[in-house]
Amino acid sequence: MSPLLDERARRLWAAAESMAIGYGGDAVVSAATGLARETIRKGRRELGRGVPATGRIRAAGAGRPSLTEAQPGLKAALEALVDPLARGDPVSPLRWTCKSRAKLTAVLTTQGWAVSSTTVGRLLHALGYRLQAVRKSREGTSHPDRNARFEHINATATSFLQRQQPVISVDTKKKELVGDVKNAGQEWQPTATPETARVHDFPGDAIGKAIPYGVYEMARNEAWVSVGRDHDTPAFAVASIRQWWTMMGRRAYPTATSLFITADAGGSNGYRCRAWKRGLQQLADDLQLRIHVSHFPPGTSKWNKIEHRLFCHITKNWRGRPLRTFASVVELIGHTRTDTGLRVKAKLDTRRYRTGVVVSRADMKQLALHPHTFHGDWNYELRPRTS
Image (cartoon, rainbow, N blue to C red; front, side, top):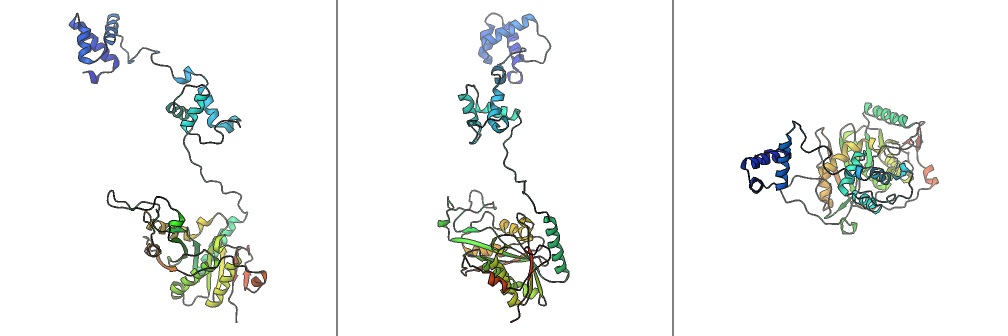
């Protein structure tokens, strides 16, 4: 019966058994139940006074008082530490350090409060505090024509697609260390046999760094990725677009006269990059295509189609797999597929690309560069030059 009874019922039951036994009953019941003799005697006293019908187990006011009652002001002291800016306390001992429970407890103890780390955690919850990470929600000041820029890009892309002219989205994917290094993500493996890699991902221990530059063709849901191993330069970006046209674009659009490119505002294909525009001019001359370019405003690269139509799927395809060789990088990119029919071709680009190339104003004047009437620095056209 003992495990089924609460503290009060167990005490009264033991006292009743002791009274039924008579002299020496307290010792017998104590030995049988493990209850202290004083507990049994207390139960007999309660039975002698009468047992009231109540749901309480202990008498009112029993138990140790809470720390906040025994130490008035403890909550206020804790809140002053965890939120010093709101309290106007620039000299708080935790102003410039991590506010863990252990450190909060140590500071409170130094101030004379008797408190444990567990109690500090409970008080923080009672005060409405929770462990929270920083949330990215403020984008800063946006350009007044930001929405109009998006509308311009969409309208231009729609016009090209209706005329069956190619529309591509370009960008450089995050650079990846190649070698025996860890790759984020999880993949199904036999139990207790995970892929192994080096403990530290030092660049010096890697074979090199893969630079995937992608060209996503919107109408056909196809993509080309050039995997560079030198530098992410404007020349590398233009060479990747040229490779896409040679391997995929020319066959798909044999009668094309124009090409529309959407790109980010910075990087190797940035709107301020003169070498990017000069490279596109040479490409327009060689392919005899009018190349139209539109750049997304700063901070809006996630709206570029290539980000969520290609790059995210590449990341999923090689998750949890160390990228040990450049060949494996190319293979994993080339075998990326989706249920919507995405097809990707990839190739390793082993060429060297010089950095720090300077394009003068005189060189820029030689280009057949025609800015659009709407924000010509962001939207422009490069026409083929006649020899």
